[in-house]
Image (tube, rainbow, N blue to C red; front, top):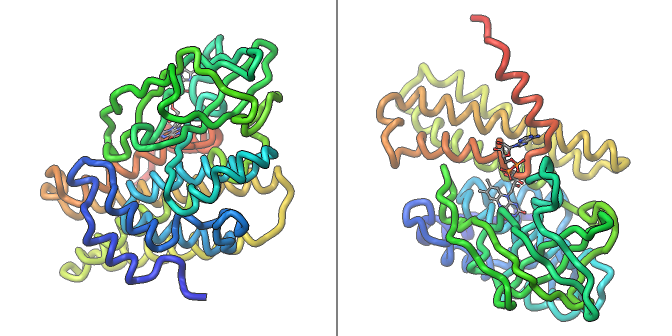
Length: 356
Ligand SMILES: Cc1cc2nc3c(=O)[nH]c(=O)nc-3n(C[C@H](O)[C@H](O)[C@H](O)COP(=O)(O)OP(=O)(O)OC[C@H]3O[C@@H](n4cnc5c(N)ncnc54)[C@H](O)[C@@H]3O)c2cc1C
């Protein structure tokens, strides 16, 4: 099988506007992906999707993130929305939305972190759901929503008084939905990520993706916090950084062993990911394995970027140099969809001094 991301697609993405440079939503790069059928990846064939193998999808994500992290990341949030809809028991929702999502006529995103990772220490839910005669009403804040202003549909949710939760599809222009100005971030500003405020937003019963049930995020979750896809994106970012180091090393033989070592680690991680995704496992084993991969992927993304700045010296500290960009982008993986276990592991490594 040829790789999902062909050299021709890589070239088309490269020549399209770089969102990191313009600071603008990656419209033309997303257009390249839509034209190449990437919007169909992993979605059911009967609704216009293309059912690639899980291994091909992971490699596809590594390769996309290697060319453009912002575009690959935006796609992961869009995919999360689509996969939740595809996994829903709501047949009508699948039938009406998935064909347009697969064809790229509709764009969706997720605002579900408050049901999994964000604000878990709060005494009250970030978004409250109440029952109404026609369905539900959502009020509160979805703190992190990537590309909300550019999406037609938001997949978000809330918590009922009894602790049950729902996830629903909410049209962005629904009364009571307010998209806040995107946050100013350390990196990935073109992803237009920010808060969505929900003020008594009416949800009809036929817009429900899952629930009401306890821990709704566990229903039909194909990705989720720290999934292998998030590791693939981190590995793609690391690969881009290692590409930059490779070109430094062409002129500087003293960098060869560092670059060879990072390249070997990158290749091993890619191969291990491909094996892991095809290996059947219990849910618990899969979760633990995904956390281990995410730690490895975060680690190589951080170390490669750190090394790149060291090698690029003062020049690499100047805004616009690929090394400073790589370092900023590598920190993203420490916070985005990062399982608590991975954060603890990282913190325990950081708390111990290296002995030289
Ligand atoms: C660029 C970017 C894009 C993202 N896009 C999306 C998206 O499209 N959709 C989506 O659903 N999610 C998205 N996320 C969310 C992401 O996956 C995580 O959920 C998020 O980064 C978790 O950070 P938080 O600040 O919300 O965490 P929180 O746990 O809410 O922490 C916030 C603050 O609370 C305090 N705090 C934390 N824990 C405790 C505690 N136990 N006790 C007391 N105080 C505490 C700390 O001061 C901390 O800074 C995005 C994140 C980023 C950075």
